[in-house]
Image (cartoon, rainbow, N blue to C red):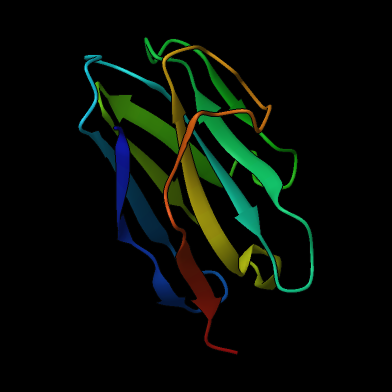
Length: 120
């Protein structure tokens, strides 16, 4: 059973930066495709960023392109966020899968979510 464990998240000021990390454990694969989705208050979950299992391909939503970067090292991925905006306030979810799924939300494994909240 693959588990996704987070670190990072918390309070941030508009214009600030924050990093989220997600590590897959308990699986048999040496690497996973991974992605971040988020759910703002009162809204549906939306795609944020994804990275292929090799790390060679990355995908970003238009709303975060140029401000967020995703990188991975085998079973761990890091989402670095800069110039945060009020619209970035959300619960962030990490997804993982043995297959490259890009921007779809059909990842097999999900963490429980980590909150990113602004201080305004």
